[in-house]
Image 1 (cartoon, rainbow, N blue to C red):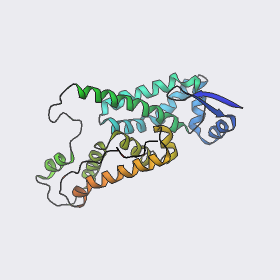
Image 2 (image 1 turned 180 degrees about the vertical axis):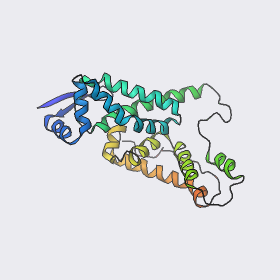
Image 3 (image 1 turned 180 degrees about the horizontal axis):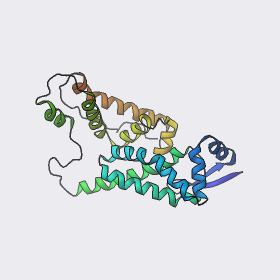
Image 4 (image 1 turned 90 degrees about the vertical axis):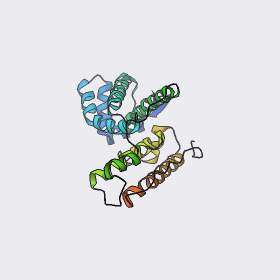
Length: 233
């Protein structure tokens, strides 16, 4: 016997009773979401409390804007609540939630891209400084010196923000949420092979961008590789 649910794109998904039971027993957040499905508002408030900061961190890295991340997080939780009656546990709750978050963030990024196509940004309008700008601001002409912990974190954050949207999303889900390739693939609509390739390119780009600053204290930012030859299936 199977239950019918709808995926984030509206497609009909089949979740077997045994699968639903397995996730219900293994994941306390699934049990909370099932209570939400049954009309328990307090259970929904508990899920928001558990995931709000995690969502904000993920979305802020994807959008490079705290204000926009807060708006998108509200939209994610709103979509979650609206989908409550159709919910069936076919995966961990975090996978279900971050699939919604990925769709919301992707839509926001596409809207931003369309706006950029019809307007010219003035210099310095970005939400985050480039690594070159940060290095010059902090040390004049980037002398070779050891960066402190806070500076290293700033440089890493700036480098992550300069990755492609998909590389940022995959890296955040892997590094900060600890999700498997299979779970990331489910969230992003990619094969495990494509996720592995995407993460490899993200790490390669981060290493190339950060080495001149963190290891040498000087250098020129290398433009990250694009994903034109990545496996997208």
